[in-house]
Image 1 (cartoon, rainbow, N blue to C red):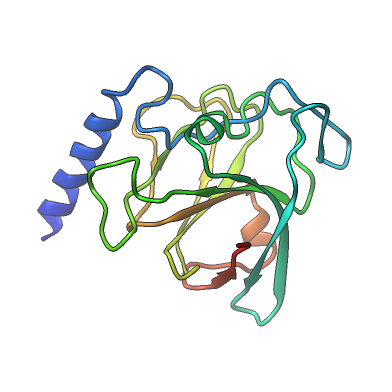
Image 2 (spheres, helix red, strand yellow):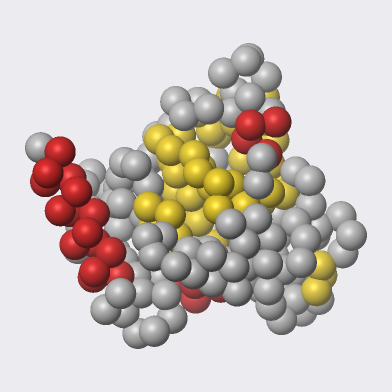
Length: 182
């Protein structure tokens, strides 16, 4: 079974590399380079996005709120946080995948793979299943475009990017649950 998992991940990475040159399957970390960002980390300008709240029930019993931009369209997901020079302290981006982007979908979830091409700030990413349970947390280096990319440890439906260290500082761990915006 372990061998199947390794072969599957390699296959997913190979297929992701067969995309249109914009990040493969569209599961790439990026940003809104044509928008400007205020000191508080909120996006301003003509492409400002509405901020929603993700509330995480951390293992220590505390509630952790993150104000997020939602990336649910392929173009938004490919752009992600690219080009940003800062991200507000309690800000992030929530990527929503409906399972239509890949052939490998399991009960609405899929292995997700992110990269840091043209992403100027180091980030932490939490992969969440369809129920909002965190299945993996990884730290990502700025401008890291070298494979292997940051692949989820388990199939997921959502990815939450925040400033690097955000989850550690607030006691958020794999297995914690998040209340996601509708």
